[in-house]
Length: 347
Ligand SMILES: Cc1cc2nc3c(=O)[nH]c(=O)nc-3n(C[C@H](O)[C@H](O)[C@H](O)COP(=O)(O)O)c2cc1C
Image (cartoon, rainbow, N blue to C red; front, side, top):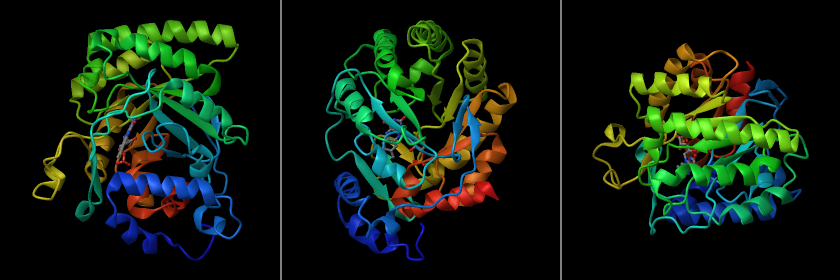
């Protein structure tokens, strides 16, 4: 935050009185309306010194990114970018619009600075997503934009590849990098795509299509694979080998967890869905360390999960990540967390 005054601790109790999804929608709509207002801008935007890094062949202004899922339709790219992110990832988008799971589907566990969500890829579909992305200015101003792809809930899992290929083709001209999300716990069987045979087939087809698109557009777009924290060592090493063999460019580690140990006994613990926040920090650190042992250095790891402080951001980098992303930390700490992480990684 460029000012001495951080208003988020004052606003947060009001937001936390609302249902989590309602608060989320209100904040984003308000942010979009006011982020450029000269009187309010100092309280929203962070002034972050450039600390450029190379990530999947891209030059990123600073290693702090917005994680996918906060802006599923790409409606708030410029407003969210004003927090000072070096890169912003939007989606998950599916080829066709879909409503997601019935509400309520997002729950706060404030005692542990955690969330449980079972949103289920609620989104307006690829066409509207692409329109929103094209209307944003972030890329034109040098920001790095990641577009995150999923499959529709009613596409049988055997046909998942066809949804990802549709997504890849659609977003290719508008992305700096593309994420293949095979780790949401809220789309039936999606995580099975992390299995050796399934992943081998999926990545083979994605790489063929990417080479064709790179040729057509005369532009090579890096692809990252987003994985779950709930994987054993054999699964992690098999994913690393396949990512390398199929010439993917990065791994995003990780999505939310199905585990509940960290929040045992608290309200909402029995809600179905993925748990985010501190529980994911240690799990994703473990995945990152194992991946780094198997991957050659040019394959990027983006560390995500439970970063609520600059110290935790640094731990992700020390474990082997090249950059980090934030989601749940923003809900509990507000936009000042972006600057705290940027300062920690610059030091
Ligand atoms: C409400 C909510 C919705 C999410 N939706 C998506 C999504 O659509 N696609 C995706 O790849 N990850 C999604 N995620 C996962 C986050 O991007 C991130 O990987 C995860 O929450 C761990 O990071 P965190 O502890 O900092 O939140 C979502 C997370 C939350 C809390």
